[in-house]
Length: 243
Image (cartoon, rainbow, N blue to C red; front, side, top):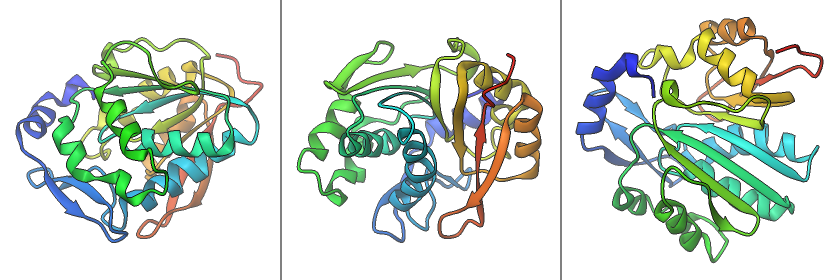
């Protein structure tokens, strides 16, 4: 999260989030003072599956047997958990999952969300617990196929390796709350960290966000959104791009 919004973000950090049940039965966190939630009230699991798994992970997995992934906003860990389950199901040999979060959610709060109970895998609870128990700041294995590297820092403080990532989950809070996280300057940094042909997926389809992505060099696709959202965005770094 960007230091330029320190006041708003610190307020969110101090405020205890409310646990809300979304339309698909899964839970999310809601901050009344910001009128902002971690996921769509139309369905937390459904949103993650539609945007990040279907439009992002499955798209990339069809082209490679190993994936290096960057996530902007570890949040509750739902995206990471569903990515673990999906990559195991798809037979992806190796996943390196790097996620940045300025203010980690307390483990007790994440546990109360009870995402594993909505999944068919018997070990979902153990996997989710391990993801949250692993230390911040160093890569650590969740399983032989899945390496998790959680970074507790603002995006400003993170140095991104050049041409390193195959896939980016861009899951920051809304542009009206954190505009710096949706700026052309920041997208240029993310673009430079992506390999040619890599993709970024995000829930935002705002005109200003699309202009910033194009300005950073991305090619864009507008895809149908999940329930309650008309469109989402998939942005690609062209193969012939010069960084």
